[in-house]
Length: 502
Image (cartoon, rainbow, N blue to C red; front, top):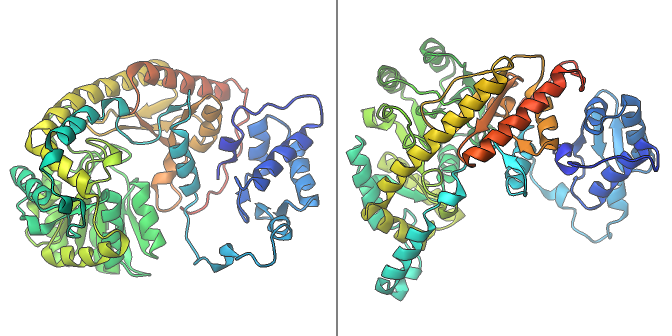
């Protein structure tokens, strides 16, 4: 947990010693379970920076909490929320849930990302972190109209269970749509999912066993890293560079025999990178030779702002090894909770077996409405409109960054997707910068979240899709002020610390 999120806008006063006030604030969060047993608290230096006090004051606050039994200080390791206080206040017959739960690998950025998602809905907070479409453009009115106009055509049985693989008319519609895009498939190769994250998890679940190797490009989608690590996979990373790392990939294939390559070939999250057409063909040839399965995640290809992107990897698939995954959360609205997968029928059959253990089938009324939405031509109209909206927001954010932060950060303007990937030029880590911008009501995602192992600490991701131009400009202005505080020496820049493996 990032304690700065719990202490935003907290001000110390002169009524009592600072260390007692800090201790009292942390104690309150422990008692109300905002901080959980065994959770690691920030280092003394980070705590001092957060409250703008001396390191001695931070140390005294922790020692005071330790004396009262709220925390444990472990030399060389850090400060942790103690279980002594919690256990003393529990009844003897209460179930000890923490002791019953299976061990869980939680990447160091997982709690931070969860909190950033929640804080996206805080009033007066400018969220440049969560990669979501703008809620003000959700086509709710059209879905409402379709519901009113066609609801009477449904029979009572239509509100019951449907096949696990999804609403057959929608699967047929999606297959037709994909065939027009070069992906030759039948509806029996399509499964409807409760969002593409479910498809990512299910694919990994049926393919990956503990100790198996999985390859990812870096940086890449945090949610994929979390899934692979939670399942016990050993993640191999292809380094970030302009061209595709074929020589490293082939070395991995020969040396480790990985089961799966996960990639976002079109407008990759977080850096907007695109694998070009020739590289896509070469990747398919190499994967076919080594019998490597490829999980192609494609949330963003519909949002291009220059020329249309290359055809999907799946469209070049001549060996049946590409699993194509996409979602309507980015193109329409996350609340639909609908995505889809296209894969070889053998894999689809196994995915169906796994999916029925989770939810039997995705929401059938949402599937019915989405099928109508696509068939009546609303999807393409919506995409055309939103490409214009998001292109303008991308340009506004890029212009603002160039105007106010050109000498402080570097970045490339993406040709599609939702994000601008930035790198801090000065000696400031992105995590430290985030701590300061959160105090100003602005959030972004530190770059280290997108690496399977400790990556660069100067990269960060900004999302331009969620807010209008005025809010974007204000957010960049606050970001500029936060960086200026470091530049002017108003904030101390701590020595670089060894960061944990994600």
